[in-house]
Image (cartoon, rainbow, N blue to C red; front, side, top):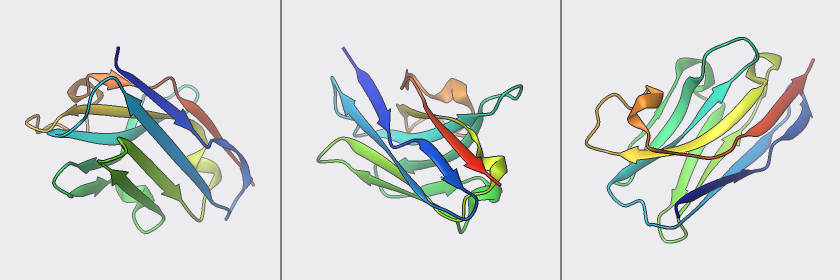
Length: 124
């Protein structure tokens, strides 16, 4: 059974940092991109960042320069280092994985595997 388990969420003040982690089990994700989505109350789930098995990374504009995604293929893990957090970053953050032949990586439908989510709350 494939599982993605997130950890590292919490409450932080604006300007602070958090590191989210996602541990995958049940299969390896070579040939897959692994990434992060987030969903704020009343909003649709949105793409945040992803990392391809070959090393490419993509970010939404609102987190560029503040968030860094890193991936350890040997350990089947992916992390999201979030710096200079803002109240608008408050959301449930989901780890996800999908085959990297899909070009629409910024859409949730490109991902086959999802974690349960971890809450990130940034206070002003």
